[in-house]
Figure 1 (cartoon, helix red, strand yellow):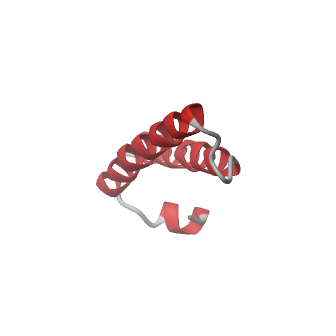
Figure 2 (cartoon, helix red, strand yellow; figure 1 turned 90 degrees about the vertical axis):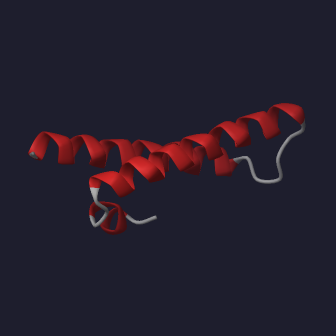
Length: 64
C-alpha cells in the first residue's frame, strides 16, 4: 500500500486495516516459527505497513 492510499483512508478504515494487518503479521510469525516461510521479507513488509497505518491513524486523531 502506498502512503497516498493510506492517507486517503478514513479513521474507521484505518482501524479495520490495522486489525487485519496485525492478525496477518501474527500468522506470519507463527508460520515462520514452525517452518521457515518462502519469503521472510513478508514479515518486514507487514510490520512496516502496520507502522505506517498506526502513524497515519495517530496523525488523524491529533488533527481532530
